Image (cartoon, rainbow, N blue to C red; front, side, top):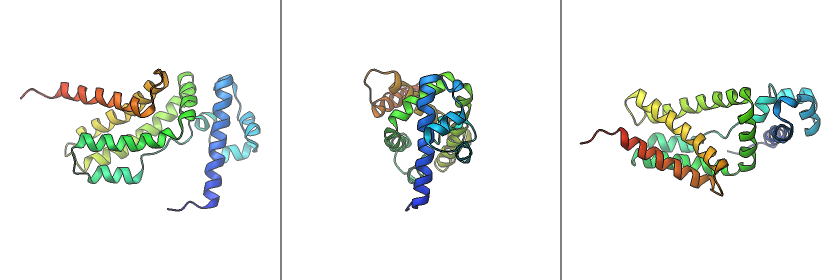
Length: 194
């Protein structure tokens, strides 16, 4: 799918606004930053700012990379062991996140100090869990099991990012591997003995 020049420009402007917001928020605290200041730093009008984001908290969070349609379809129709297919799904998602490592670190700083930004991110996570539940329900008959697995999977993303942020020199993919090993070990504890 080809993205038009107009859409690429729109995406770049949104990213520029997010970067300016995050840079100012890391330096001053998001609560001390105004939308006018963000607009001026970005080189746009305040009106243009509001064409992209409803407030400075949404600008700080931006649009987290969604699970790709191809990855969701592969998970939906996969026929390998579910744990392996789910790990492959997460590996693909983390490959996309790796492109935004500097932004992830700044977002982490903002999230630790701003409750409204955390709430906005939670809204995105709720949507991701719903999409993931739908994908998993094609392979898991028990709807609550699919929802629980989707919830644990999206939580694993957050735990891996946290470990990467606070770990000493650990890569994003290594953090995911560590968290995934813990997830598999936890699941084994819930399996009744034969």
